[in-house]
Amino acid sequence: MKEHAGQKPVSSLKIYLRLLGYVRPYTGKFAISILGFLIFASSQPMLAGIFKYFVDGLIDPSVSPFPGLPLLADMPLMHTVPVLIVLIAAWQGVGSYLGNYFLQKVSLGLVHDLRVALFDSLLRLPNRYFDENSSGHLISRITFNVTMVTGAATNAIKIVIREGLTAVFLFAYLLWMNWKLTLVMVAILPVIGVLVSSASRKFRKQAKKIQLAMGDVTHVASETIQGYRVVRSFGGEPYESRRFRAASTDNTSKQLRMVKTGEIFTPTLQLVTYIAMAFVLFLVLWLRGDATAGDLVAFITAAGLLPKPVRQLSEVSSTIQRGVAGAESIFEQLDEAPETDHGTVERERVTGRLEVRDLTFRYPGGARPVLEKVSFAVEPGQMVALVGRSGSGKSTLANLIPRFYHHDQGQILIDGVDVEDYTLRNLRRHIALVTQQVTLFNDTVANNIAYGDLAGAPRGAIEAAAEAAYAKEFIDRLPQGFDTLIGENGVMLSGGQRQRLAIARALLKDAPILILDEATSALDTESERHIQAALDRATRGRTTLVIAHRLSTIEKADVILVMEQGRLVERGSHSQLLAAGGAYARLHAMQFHDDAPADVGRR
Ligand code: ATP
Ligand code: MG
Image (cartoon, helix red, strand yellow):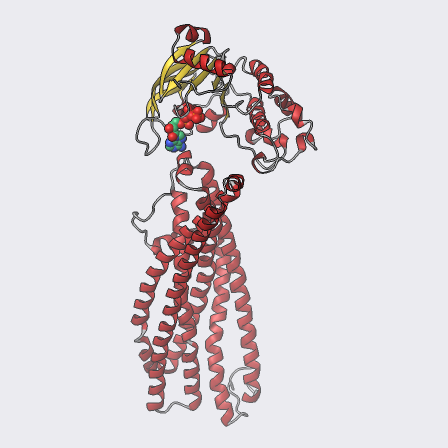
């Protein structure tokens, strides 16, 4: 996991402003929503104002309050007050609808945009990023963090605008009614300010911890779900159960801590507000002066309406901080540098000459180089085999050719052009790769073979590729043939069947360079022999790099490279290497003696 604690915290305001940048496309909807909240907020002092007329009406209900206005001129207070109250409620309702509905539109749109941006960034991030971050945390960022941001975007904006405007309107009304009394209330603002800012800081820190804890929950759950067979066969249930409980308990206690902060904060603020209110009430009774009873009732009502928006405004700080913390990690991911792609060369088709010169590579953070001064060249159409004991760097070398990782020292050239000089997309078009771990998608057999750029390939071509990969014999026996759904990562298939689909996919790609990393390791000798024959045909005219432990598969290779701890220690054809009597010969003797696959280089 990446540790973010050491990084300098970005200011909340900066993050919030950046988040608001995402609102820009929704400016129109946002404006309607603000208008709605303006309408809503304006209804609040109106409701307080009604009390003035009500109290006046108690004294003489037959007086007309608005003698100058056309419709209301002849209306006595007895009728005006009830009619107005209903009208104000309707006004408030319209405001509430416009405000809430349009704000939801904005915020749901915002969530969609953020989610898509996060997902798209996953498609561009370098392999290294996936090595460093667990999938659980990446998934939880898309599902959980984004909803935290919605909270900040919807509820917070709603409350800030609606309650903020309400407070402003009430305040203006109070000032207009009696500015001296109102200024007494203003005196508490600095106290509120201090309370809110200290709580905000706490909220953000806690929210960040909650998100990491949520990532842990997703991480443990997804690991257990994916590895349920191992969990069961090795009796890992108690361990996994404990691990999950710990992650979930941790999450719960962190959430509770945040709730606690909030629940101490809100009543404190409430108390401060009411102390100010109490003082105002005292002053009203003490110096009522020449104000009418109606005026004073309206004033007190309006002042009484004030603590609610103030409380809500203060509570919103926790929502905002949660959103800011969510947005922070979202932006961190969005700011990660994508795969470097500075190349400019694009070729329609390469001949497939592959040359590796003095290639030295270490994984980021790795102590020692995994590859050291590796050099070799393969002519177009040749087959080169890479053998060597486990961990000697064979897959790493294969991964460097399509630039899954970046190397600093040495060069890899395809048709004489450094792979770094090709555009990534073009480079990868020239290479068909069957990786050591087969990846299949929860789709039909046909769609798994014709994946990505190959999607939409004619059925005939798909069947031919399947035939060549010796996969047709089992596909035809599947219930719906090529249209059978194969489950998540192809769970419905055997290991060898999965490998054959991966080979079919690579063959359908028909790229000039074919890399097979232990592509036939899971196959029985019989099936392998069939594939071998097919591959002999398929590899004709294309450069092939085969990595294999089972030496019988690579006897026909033009060159065999023997690797040991990242170095090429031997090279030559099968017969040359046998004659030389080195590492390869020893290994060969051992495999034929045991008649079982063994590691090259074991002595
Ligand atoms: P095998 O025959 O078992 O597949 P290999 O020859 O393909 O082995 P590599 O997968 O290339 O071996 O690994 C070479 C070394 O690099 C190993 O020591 C391994 O620990 C290290 N390594 C592999 N992948 C990574 C990675 N993503 N990050 C850091 N180190 C890695
Ligand atoms: Mg490997």
